[in-house]
Image (cartoon, rainbow, N blue to C red; front, side, top):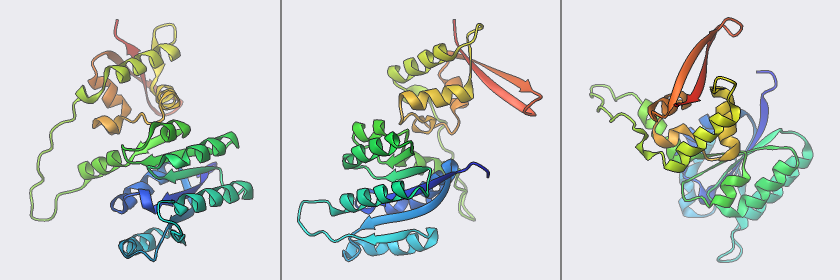
Length: 249
């Protein structure tokens, strides 16, 4: 695709689950083309061997970083230095930082100051400072849950019927965030275009994602909250339907 972002994907092997690598790379493809793919860790450690087939599958280059001192994370330093080298090379438009470590907070901030788009991916234990330092942050648990929902049942077995997602997981603060954002974008009739709404929600709260609440689509999540009106409008210009949202009066 033209104007597709060229992304540098940098993975902290010490703070990223190897079992989610396939889902992580699939999510990266949504945002752009992964032109640089690197993972950092001490590959001489016995527990790192299981990464090898996954790295080959996704053509990710491992970078060796020895742990010279106990208690110090040398991987972080190597990844930060590489990120700055990539930044000054001018060969990418954005970064994907895969880690649950707050040590990358300043790196994310610095890259955004340089005009880079920064996507963060980590587990729900990720400290808030790193999350808000990114343009968008995705929880790996949500990616895994979405993948399990879509996975077909093995041959000869009947798929277990999964419980329908419910909006109860959405806190009052999330509902208020959506309502206020609708108000910020509303036209004279009180409607906000769903595409603009999704963008604004992420700007206000980088880890906002309807998948965190069991919904693959933002429109379905908002409809389930029952505090909003959904209006689908046919647009001949785009040969499709555009969705608009309004706070219920």
